[in-house]
Length: 373
Image (cartoon, rainbow, N blue to C red; front, side, top):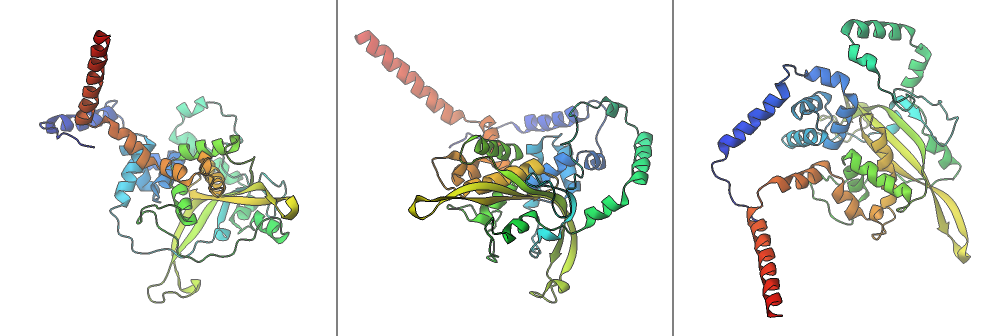
Protein backbone atom coordinates (compact mmCIF):
# COMPACT_ATOMS: atom_id res chain seq x y z
CA UNK A 1 0.00 0.00 0.00
CA UNK A 2 1.47 3.35 -1.02
CA UNK A 3 1.33 6.59 0.92
CA UNK A 4 1.98 10.17 -0.18
CA UNK A 5 4.39 12.04 2.07
CA UNK A 6 2.62 14.84 3.91
CA UNK A 7 4.66 18.05 3.77
CA UNK A 8 4.43 21.04 6.02
CA UNK A 9 2.63 19.16 8.80
CA UNK A 10 5.24 19.48 11.55
CA UNK A 11 3.68 22.50 13.19
CA UNK A 12 0.21 20.95 13.08
CA UNK A 13 1.52 17.77 14.70
CA UNK A 14 3.23 19.79 17.46
CA UNK A 15 -0.01 21.66 18.09
CA UNK A 16 -1.89 18.35 18.24
CA UNK A 17 0.51 17.04 20.89
CA UNK A 18 0.12 20.27 22.87
CA UNK A 19 -3.64 19.83 22.67
CA UNK A 20 -3.34 16.36 24.18
CA UNK A 21 -1.45 17.89 27.10
CA UNK A 22 -4.10 20.58 27.47
CA UNK A 23 -6.98 18.10 27.49
CA UNK A 24 -5.25 16.13 30.23
CA UNK A 25 -4.57 19.16 32.42
CA UNK A 26 -7.38 21.60 31.57
CA UNK A 27 -9.22 20.97 34.85
CA UNK A 28 -6.14 21.98 36.81
CA UNK A 29 -5.78 18.53 38.38
CA UNK A 30 -3.64 15.51 37.64
CA UNK A 31 -3.21 11.97 38.88
CA UNK A 32 -0.01 10.92 40.62
CA UNK A 33 1.52 7.69 39.35
CA UNK A 34 1.48 6.43 42.95
CA UNK A 35 -2.26 7.15 43.16
CA UNK A 36 -2.95 5.18 39.99
CA UNK A 37 -0.80 2.31 41.24
CA UNK A 38 -2.67 2.26 44.55
CA UNK A 39 -6.21 2.67 43.26
CA UNK A 40 -6.40 1.09 39.79
CA UNK A 41 -5.29 -2.44 40.54
CA UNK A 42 -7.56 -4.10 37.99
CA UNK A 43 -6.47 -1.85 35.12
CA UNK A 44 -2.81 -2.20 36.03
CA UNK A 45 -3.07 -5.99 36.06
CA UNK A 46 -4.80 -5.96 32.66
CA UNK A 47 -2.15 -3.70 31.11
CA UNK A 48 0.72 -5.76 32.54
CA UNK A 49 -0.79 -8.98 31.22
CA UNK A 50 -1.38 -7.67 27.71
CA UNK A 51 2.07 -6.06 27.64
CA UNK A 52 3.94 -9.17 28.81
CA UNK A 53 5.72 -6.81 31.19
CA UNK A 54 5.49 -7.06 34.96
CA UNK A 55 5.96 -3.64 36.53
CA UNK A 56 3.10 -2.08 38.45
CA UNK A 57 4.79 1.32 38.57
CA UNK A 58 5.52 1.52 34.85
CA UNK A 59 2.04 0.20 34.04
CA UNK A 60 0.65 3.05 36.18
CA UNK A 61 2.83 5.53 34.28
CA UNK A 62 1.60 4.18 30.95
CA UNK A 63 -2.02 4.45 32.13
CA UNK A 64 -1.43 8.07 33.16
CA UNK A 65 0.18 8.94 29.85
CA UNK A 66 -2.60 7.14 27.95
CA UNK A 67 -5.29 8.89 30.03
CA UNK A 68 -6.78 5.57 31.04
CA UNK A 69 -6.91 3.96 27.59
CA UNK A 70 -5.84 0.31 28.06
CA UNK A 71 -4.94 -0.15 24.38
CA UNK A 72 -2.68 2.91 24.31
CA UNK A 73 -1.12 2.00 27.67
CA UNK A 74 -0.31 -1.51 26.39
CA UNK A 75 1.19 0.00 23.23
CA UNK A 76 3.42 2.30 25.32
CA UNK A 77 4.55 -0.46 27.66
CA UNK A 78 5.32 -2.93 24.86
CA UNK A 79 7.32 -0.26 23.06
CA UNK A 80 9.35 0.35 26.22
CA UNK A 81 9.74 -3.38 26.79
CA UNK A 82 11.27 -3.79 23.33
CA UNK A 83 14.16 -1.46 24.31
CA UNK A 84 15.26 -3.48 27.34
CA UNK A 85 18.08 -6.03 27.31
CA UNK A 86 17.17 -9.56 28.33
CA UNK A 87 19.86 -10.51 30.83
CA UNK A 88 18.39 -13.66 32.35
CA UNK A 89 15.77 -16.33 31.88
CA UNK A 90 14.02 -17.45 35.04
CA UNK A 91 14.11 -21.03 36.18
CA UNK A 92 11.02 -23.15 35.73
CA UNK A 93 8.19 -21.64 37.74
CA UNK A 94 6.19 -24.15 39.78
CA UNK A 95 2.57 -23.10 40.39
CA UNK A 96 2.42 -25.50 43.36
CA UNK A 97 4.71 -23.07 45.19
CA UNK A 98 2.22 -20.20 44.87
CA UNK A 99 1.56 -18.20 48.03
CA UNK A 100 -2.20 -18.31 47.67
CA UNK A 101 -4.36 -15.26 48.33
CA UNK A 102 -7.55 -16.54 46.68
CA UNK A 103 -8.51 -20.08 45.74
CA UNK A 104 -11.88 -21.43 44.67
CA UNK A 105 -13.29 -24.45 42.88
CA UNK A 106 -16.61 -24.55 41.06
CA UNK A 107 -16.33 -28.33 40.75
CA UNK A 108 -16.09 -29.33 44.41
CA UNK A 109 -17.54 -27.78 47.54
CA UNK A 110 -14.93 -29.26 49.87
CA UNK A 111 -11.35 -29.15 48.63
CA UNK A 112 -8.14 -29.90 50.55
CA UNK A 113 -7.07 -26.70 52.23
CA UNK A 114 -10.52 -25.19 51.83
CA UNK A 115 -11.94 -22.51 49.57
CA UNK A 116 -10.39 -19.08 50.09
CA UNK A 117 -12.59 -16.30 48.77
CA UNK A 118 -9.93 -13.59 49.04
CA UNK A 119 -10.48 -10.22 47.37
CA UNK A 120 -13.14 -10.36 44.64
CA UNK A 121 -16.11 -8.39 43.37
CA UNK A 122 -17.94 -11.68 42.71
CA UNK A 123 -19.80 -11.43 46.00
CA UNK A 124 -20.66 -7.72 45.85
CA UNK A 125 -24.05 -6.25 44.91
CA UNK A 126 -22.60 -4.40 41.90
CA UNK A 127 -24.26 -1.15 42.97
CA UNK A 128 -22.62 2.26 42.82
CA UNK A 129 -21.04 3.17 46.17
CA UNK A 130 -21.64 6.90 46.44
CA UNK A 131 -19.67 7.01 49.71
CA UNK A 132 -16.51 6.75 47.59
CA UNK A 133 -17.18 10.29 46.38
CA UNK A 134 -16.66 11.50 49.95
CA UNK A 135 -13.60 9.37 50.68
CA UNK A 136 -10.79 11.16 52.59
CA UNK A 137 -7.35 10.19 53.85
CA UNK A 138 -8.56 10.26 57.46
CA UNK A 139 -11.47 7.92 56.72
CA UNK A 140 -9.19 5.56 54.79
CA UNK A 141 -6.66 5.50 57.63
CA UNK A 142 -9.35 4.79 60.24
CA UNK A 143 -10.88 2.00 58.15
CA UNK A 144 -7.49 0.35 57.62
CA UNK A 145 -6.66 0.41 61.32
CA UNK A 146 -10.02 -1.15 62.19
CA UNK A 147 -9.73 -3.82 59.49
CA UNK A 148 -6.17 -4.81 60.29
CA UNK A 149 -6.97 -4.95 63.98
CA UNK A 150 -9.95 -7.27 63.46
CA UNK A 151 -8.32 -9.48 60.83
CA UNK A 152 -8.50 -13.19 61.49
CA UNK A 153 -4.90 -14.29 62.00
CA UNK A 154 -5.64 -17.95 61.36
CA UNK A 155 -7.25 -17.19 58.00
CA UNK A 156 -4.26 -15.05 57.08
CA UNK A 157 -1.88 -17.88 57.96
CA UNK A 158 -3.94 -20.38 55.95
CA UNK A 159 -3.64 -18.16 52.89
CA UNK A 160 0.16 -18.33 53.23
CA UNK A 161 0.25 -22.13 52.94
CA UNK A 162 1.32 -24.01 49.83
CA UNK A 163 -1.93 -25.73 48.97
CA UNK A 164 -2.33 -28.96 46.95
CA UNK A 165 -3.75 -28.80 43.44
CA UNK A 166 -7.34 -29.99 43.12
CA UNK A 167 -6.75 -31.75 39.80
CA UNK A 168 -4.00 -33.89 41.35
CA UNK A 169 -6.67 -35.80 43.28
CA UNK A 170 -8.54 -36.53 40.05
CA UNK A 171 -5.32 -37.73 38.47
CA UNK A 172 -4.74 -40.14 41.34
CA UNK A 173 -8.17 -41.61 40.64
CA UNK A 174 -7.34 -41.89 36.95
CA UNK A 175 -10.23 -39.61 36.02
CA UNK A 176 -8.15 -37.17 33.96
CA UNK A 177 -5.05 -37.66 31.87
CA UNK A 178 -1.75 -37.44 33.67
CA UNK A 179 0.43 -35.07 31.63
CA UNK A 180 4.08 -36.14 31.40
CA UNK A 181 6.69 -33.50 32.16
CA UNK A 182 7.85 -31.80 28.96
CA UNK A 183 11.24 -30.10 29.29
CA UNK A 184 11.34 -28.94 25.67
CA UNK A 185 12.53 -25.34 25.49
CA UNK A 186 9.46 -23.19 24.76
CA UNK A 187 9.23 -21.04 21.67
CA UNK A 188 9.42 -17.28 22.26
CA UNK A 189 6.86 -15.32 20.23
CA UNK A 190 8.51 -12.03 21.25
CA UNK A 191 11.67 -13.01 19.35
CA UNK A 192 10.46 -15.35 16.63
CA UNK A 193 7.46 -14.73 14.40
CA UNK A 194 4.48 -17.02 14.85
CA UNK A 195 4.24 -19.88 12.39
CA UNK A 196 1.52 -22.47 11.84
CA UNK A 197 0.87 -25.04 13.06
CA UNK A 198 1.69 -23.27 16.33
CA UNK A 199 3.32 -25.07 19.22
CA UNK A 200 1.56 -25.28 22.58
CA UNK A 201 4.02 -22.80 24.09
CA UNK A 202 3.29 -20.30 21.31
CA UNK A 203 -0.45 -20.65 21.79
CA UNK A 204 -0.23 -20.12 25.55
CA UNK A 205 2.07 -17.10 25.18
CA UNK A 206 -0.23 -15.38 22.71
CA UNK A 207 -3.29 -16.18 24.79
CA UNK A 208 -1.77 -14.83 27.99
CA UNK A 209 -0.75 -11.55 26.31
CA UNK A 210 -3.93 -11.27 24.24
CA UNK A 211 -6.50 -8.49 24.57
CA UNK A 212 -8.74 -9.29 27.52
CA UNK A 213 -12.01 -8.38 25.81
CA UNK A 214 -11.19 -10.33 22.64
CA UNK A 215 -10.25 -13.48 24.56
CA UNK A 216 -13.37 -13.21 26.71
CA UNK A 217 -15.63 -12.80 23.66
CA UNK A 218 -14.14 -15.79 21.85
CA UNK A 219 -14.35 -17.96 24.97
CA UNK A 220 -17.99 -16.95 25.32
CA UNK A 221 -18.54 -18.04 21.72
CA UNK A 222 -16.99 -21.42 22.55
CA UNK A 223 -19.42 -21.98 25.41
CA UNK A 224 -22.41 -20.86 23.32
CA UNK A 225 -21.83 -23.71 20.92
CA UNK A 226 -18.78 -23.04 18.73
CA UNK A 227 -16.83 -26.13 19.62
CA UNK A 228 -17.31 -27.05 23.28
CA UNK A 229 -19.93 -28.00 25.84
CA UNK A 230 -20.13 -26.31 29.24
CA UNK A 231 -16.74 -26.38 31.08
CA UNK A 232 -16.29 -26.16 34.86
CA UNK A 233 -13.57 -24.41 36.85
CA UNK A 234 -11.60 -27.17 38.55
CA UNK A 235 -9.50 -24.64 40.43
CA UNK A 236 -8.86 -20.93 40.24
CA UNK A 237 -5.93 -19.47 42.14
CA UNK A 238 -4.67 -15.95 42.68
CA UNK A 239 -1.40 -15.49 44.50
CA UNK A 240 2.31 -14.77 44.49
CA UNK A 241 4.76 -16.95 42.59
CA UNK A 242 8.46 -16.91 43.53
CA UNK A 243 10.89 -16.24 40.68
CA UNK A 244 14.45 -17.58 40.60
CA UNK A 245 17.32 -17.26 38.14
CA UNK A 246 20.32 -19.49 37.84
CA UNK A 247 23.44 -18.52 39.71
CA UNK A 248 26.07 -17.23 37.26
CA UNK A 249 28.69 -19.01 39.39
CA UNK A 250 26.86 -22.34 39.38
CA UNK A 251 24.74 -22.59 36.22
CA UNK A 252 22.58 -25.66 35.66
CA UNK A 253 22.74 -26.52 39.35
CA UNK A 254 19.79 -27.32 41.60
CA UNK A 255 17.45 -24.73 43.07
CA UNK A 256 19.59 -24.34 46.19
CA UNK A 257 22.10 -22.34 44.16
CA UNK A 258 19.49 -20.21 42.37
CA UNK A 259 19.01 -16.50 43.10
CA UNK A 260 15.62 -15.44 44.44
CA UNK A 261 14.44 -12.39 42.45
CA UNK A 262 11.10 -11.73 44.11
CA UNK A 263 7.45 -12.60 43.55
CA UNK A 264 4.88 -11.85 40.86
CA UNK A 265 1.14 -11.93 41.28
CA UNK A 266 -0.67 -14.23 38.86
CA UNK A 267 -4.07 -15.78 38.22
CA UNK A 268 -4.09 -19.49 37.35
CA UNK A 269 -7.02 -21.58 36.15
CA UNK A 270 -7.37 -25.29 35.48
CA UNK A 271 -10.63 -25.82 33.61
CA UNK A 272 -12.37 -29.19 33.49
CA UNK A 273 -14.00 -30.09 30.17
CA UNK A 274 -16.12 -33.23 29.63
CA UNK A 275 -15.29 -35.06 26.43
CA UNK A 276 -16.52 -38.20 24.70
CA UNK A 277 -14.07 -40.63 23.12
CA UNK A 278 -15.07 -43.45 20.78
CA UNK A 279 -13.47 -46.80 21.46
CA UNK A 280 -13.62 -50.10 19.66
CA UNK A 281 -16.95 -51.41 18.36
CA UNK A 282 -18.47 -47.94 18.52
CA UNK A 283 -18.43 -47.87 22.33
CA UNK A 284 -18.37 -44.29 23.64
CA UNK A 285 -16.71 -43.34 26.88
CA UNK A 286 -16.93 -40.10 28.83
CA UNK A 287 -13.69 -38.62 30.11
CA UNK A 288 -12.45 -35.34 31.57
CA UNK A 289 -9.99 -33.11 29.74
CA UNK A 290 -8.73 -29.79 30.95
CA UNK A 291 -7.56 -26.41 29.67
CA UNK A 292 -5.01 -24.14 31.29
CA UNK A 293 -4.76 -20.39 31.80
CA UNK A 294 -2.23 -18.21 33.61
CA UNK A 295 -1.68 -14.47 33.36
CA UNK A 296 -0.17 -11.59 35.32
CA UNK A 297 -2.08 -10.02 38.20
CA UNK A 298 -5.58 -10.72 39.44
CA UNK A 299 -7.03 -11.19 35.99
CA UNK A 300 -9.50 -13.98 36.62
CA UNK A 301 -11.93 -13.58 33.73
CA UNK A 302 -9.06 -13.53 31.25
CA UNK A 303 -7.40 -16.59 32.82
CA UNK A 304 -10.70 -18.51 32.67
CA UNK A 305 -11.28 -17.48 29.05
CA UNK A 306 -7.69 -18.41 28.22
CA UNK A 307 -8.16 -21.92 29.63
CA UNK A 308 -11.31 -22.37 27.52
CA UNK A 309 -9.54 -21.29 24.33
CA UNK A 310 -6.51 -23.42 25.20
CA UNK A 311 -8.72 -26.50 25.17
CA UNK A 312 -10.78 -25.33 22.20
CA UNK A 313 -7.70 -24.87 20.00
CA UNK A 314 -6.77 -28.51 20.54
CA UNK A 315 -9.83 -29.40 18.43
CA UNK A 316 -8.09 -28.16 15.30
CA UNK A 317 -11.26 -27.98 13.21
CA UNK A 318 -10.61 -24.98 10.97
CA UNK A 319 -14.27 -24.78 9.98
CA UNK A 320 -15.04 -23.81 13.60
CA UNK A 321 -13.68 -20.27 14.19
CA UNK A 322 -12.79 -20.86 17.84
CA UNK A 323 -10.81 -24.00 16.93
CA UNK A 324 -8.97 -22.33 14.06
CA UNK A 325 -5.62 -21.33 15.58
CA UNK A 326 -4.84 -18.85 12.81
CA UNK A 327 -8.19 -17.08 13.29
CA UNK A 328 -7.89 -16.95 17.09
CA UNK A 329 -4.18 -16.20 17.55
CA UNK A 330 -3.97 -13.54 14.84
CA UNK A 331 -6.96 -11.57 16.08
CA UNK A 332 -6.59 -11.35 19.87
CA UNK A 333 -3.43 -9.24 20.09
CA UNK A 334 -4.21 -5.78 21.47
CA UNK A 335 -1.39 -3.89 19.76
CA UNK A 336 -1.76 -5.65 16.41
CA UNK A 337 -5.54 -5.24 16.17
CA UNK A 338 -5.66 -1.71 17.58
CA UNK A 339 -2.74 -0.65 15.40
CA UNK A 340 -4.32 -1.98 12.23
CA UNK A 341 -7.67 -0.36 12.96
CA UNK A 342 -5.95 2.92 13.89
CA UNK A 343 -3.87 2.91 10.72
CA UNK A 344 -7.08 3.60 8.80
CA UNK A 345 -6.77 7.19 10.07
CA UNK A 346 -3.47 7.57 8.19
CA UNK A 347 -3.34 9.05 4.67
CA UNK A 348 -4.74 6.70 2.03
CA UNK A 349 -4.90 9.34 -0.67
CA UNK A 350 -3.37 7.31 -3.50
CA UNK A 351 -5.35 4.12 -2.91
CA UNK A 352 -8.62 5.97 -2.37
CA UNK A 353 -8.18 8.10 -5.49
CA UNK A 354 -7.57 4.90 -7.45
CA UNK A 355 -10.82 3.42 -6.11
CA UNK A 356 -12.64 6.68 -6.77
CA UNK A 357 -11.47 6.67 -10.39
CA UNK A 358 -12.71 3.10 -10.76
CA UNK A 359 -16.11 4.11 -9.41
CA UNK A 360 -16.30 7.08 -11.83
CA UNK A 361 -15.31 4.93 -14.80
CA UNK A 362 -17.91 2.33 -13.86
CA UNK A 363 -20.59 5.05 -13.67
CA UNK A 364 -19.49 6.49 -17.03
CA UNK A 365 -19.57 3.07 -18.70
CA UNK A 366 -23.01 2.40 -17.32
CA UNK A 367 -24.19 5.77 -18.57
CA UNK A 368 -22.83 5.12 -22.08
CA UNK A 369 -24.45 1.67 -22.19
CA UNK A 370 -27.79 3.18 -21.15
CA UNK A 371 -27.61 5.78 -23.95
CA UNK A 372 -26.79 3.11 -26.53
CA UNK A 373 -29.83 1.10 -25.51
